[in-house]
Length: 218
Image 1 (cartoon, one colour):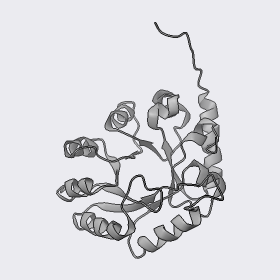
Image 2 (cartoon, rainbow, N blue to C red; image 1 turned 90 degrees about the vertical axis):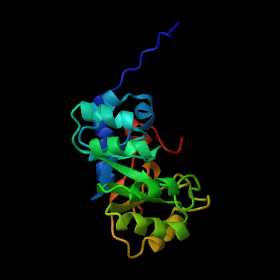
Image 3 (tube, rainbow, N blue to C red; image 1 turned 180 degrees about the horizontal axis):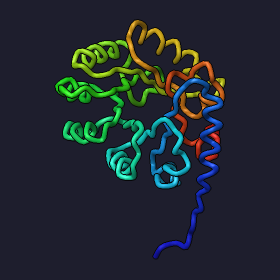
Image 4 (cartoon, one colour; image 1 turned 180 degrees about the vertical axis):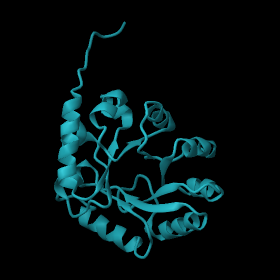
């Protein structure tokens, strides 16, 4: 039996929050993160309220496919990249940018002759996904040699704290030194970094929870 619960989403409020992010982000472009059905707010509502974003960041091809079917023509980023090699044709057809965070994905994509836009993820201290610094540059060069358009990404572990390690400053130092001399745009800031670390934004910011009126600090 379904519970009689109704959620009313104010899409105008989503638009307001996006405009506030743009004020904070300066010249950085915005990936609006809409994972987990836009944090439970529905992709449909997000598409309406966040229509002025520069791109949507999603977890899987199903969400990307739905956005394209609704007429979304701007960029889509697959936040966890490809789950299997067989996903590559669909990602190309849907014109998705892809995050690459593990060696299997590098192996799959360096065999792919169609150039794709890649955000290579550095594990600068979050210790969840991404390449450690000593492996990052090799992965970059392999994918660049295969003809892909290369960009850089990391994720801050403690952007909503000032007294936990690794600090944003330490992760920024790791990121900057690792990508030194490598071409490509950068994507660093999550919601907390957009709010409190505006010296660590990068070319693309990735706000998620803040777009829905929720503080990243809980």
